[in-house]
Length: 140
Image 1 (cartoon, rainbow, N blue to C red):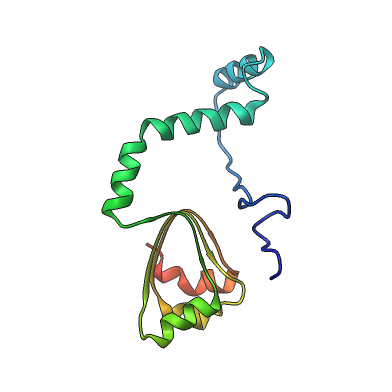
Image 2: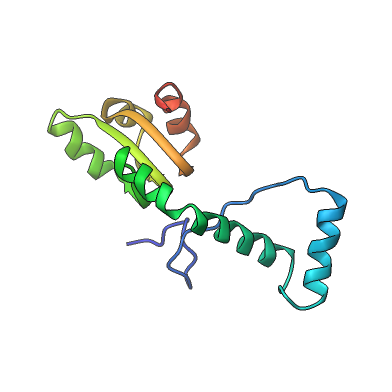
C-alpha cells in the first residue's frame, strides 16, 4: 500500500493545517517576552498551548455537540472502494466530521456525487479539487 500524501513517513499523524491570524502589537510583544523569558520555545508553541487550553476549557460542550449532532471526532477516510460499496447498497452518506475528512484521490466527482448526500466538516477536508468542486452544493 503506497504511503498517504497526508502522512509523513516518520509520523502517523496528518499534516498540520496552517492558520494566519492578525494580532495587536502589544499582544505580540507580550508573546515575544514570554518566549524570551523561556516560558515557551517560540510564538507557535505559546499559541498552540493557548488554543489547547481554550479547547480543554470547553471540552464538555464539544463532547455534547459531537454526540447530539452525531459527528465523527478525528479522521474519517473514504476511498473509491468504500463509496462503491455505498453505491452498490443504494445508500447515500451524510458525512459529519470534526477533525479531518479525507476523500481519496481515486474517488471521481461522479462517484462522490452519487454517494455523498451532504458533507459537514469542522476542521479540514482533503479531496481532489474536482471532487471539492462537485460537492460544493452539498457542503453544510
